[in-house]
Every structure is written in structure tokens, then in C-alpha cells.
Length: 121
Length: 112
Image 1 (cartoon, chains in turn orange, brown):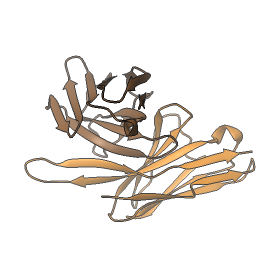
Image 2 (tube, each protein chain N blue to C red; image 1 turned 90 degrees about the vertical axis):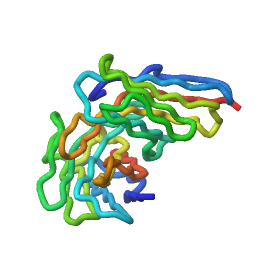
Image 3 (cartoon, chains in turn cyan, yellow; image 1 turned 135 degrees about the horizontal axis):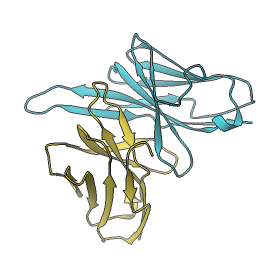
Image 4 (tube, each protein chain N blue to C red; image 1 turned 60 degrees about the vertical axis):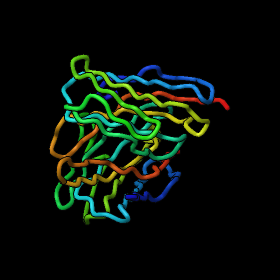
């Protein structure tokens, strides 16, 4: 099956520093990847849609200058949390979209990475 | 949550029993998907049901969709301890990019 990796799996940083998280689709190409944020015992909140070769689309309320997204290739998207603060501590999950057009039906599936736990001290 | 809710928030059953989780949504959808998440891990796709479908099966999973009530249900039959996880429904509202909006999830605990 389709595999998506994330690196690092855990990161602890000091307040004010920037942290980069990588999301890779290992065995398929993904023109679209997504970044989510999840607080303990809560739902996944879609932060932004990452499109290869173009600017990311951010959901309402998500600061694009705070969460920088780069999707430079068909297998890699990065999320950089700039000037991180303790309230940015969370579980960040990416997914890569695999859309297969076919007859009689299509399939459209997101494959999720294992997540990155960010702790900002 | 960004789009709709699941209920119950938590469900505790014995092995062998059936587990039913419900999901409601507010806006129209192109399809609805169910995912599973083990504690502190990524999500695993379980099943996708399109807006013109009413029921789908996959192994011990059965998903129904009632667009008139804007609701879906996930039934896990003959549950096992290994089914213990959080289950989320995610709504695809039909954007070309396939964005998904997740509900709060149901925490299922299956006791051996």
C-alpha cells in the first residue's frame, strides 16, 4: 500500500526557534498534500493544502506566515513552524492524496503520515 | 470540529459485540470517509462512501449514508480487542483538491 513518512517523529525546541517538518510519499507521487494539527483527544484540524509547484492554500484562521509550507517536488512537502511558542505545541500530521481515475469508479484516498509531536518549551 | 460531529464520543464494549458509531455533517458532501487512529499515531483509511451510495461493506465494516439526514454510521461487527482505537469520519465537500474535514471522533475500547 501507499506509504507516507514524516520526519522528525518528535521534536522539542525552545520558544522563538523555527522547526521544519518533512512529509514524504514513499511509493507514489502526490501533487496534493495536506497538513493537519491535532490536540490531545481532539479531532484533526485541516491547516492547509499543499500543491506541488504552487502556493499552499490555508484554511481560515491559520496564519500563513507562521506556518510556512513548501511543496517542491511530487514526493515532498515541508511545514515550517516559525518563531514557535508553547501554544504551537501539538501533533502535526500530513497526508498525501492519491487519486486514481478509473472505470466504473474512481478512488480518492489520503494516506497519512505517522505524525510529528512538537513540544515548544 | 470543522464539520459535524461523531457520537458517541466514547464507546466501551466486550469482544464479540458489535460497535456502532455515528457521524453527522452540516453541508453537502461529495463523499464521506472513515478513518481509524491508534493512540498517538497516524490515520488509516477504512472506507469511502460516495454521496450517491447508501451502504458499503468491507470485511467486518459496514458503512451507511443517509444524505437526507446528513448522517453516516460505521458498524464494526464481532469486535476484537485490536479494534480499540479512535474512529473519525471525514467529509469531502467536493472541492477539486479533495480536502477533508474531520469530526471529533469516537474512542472505541474493546475489552477482551
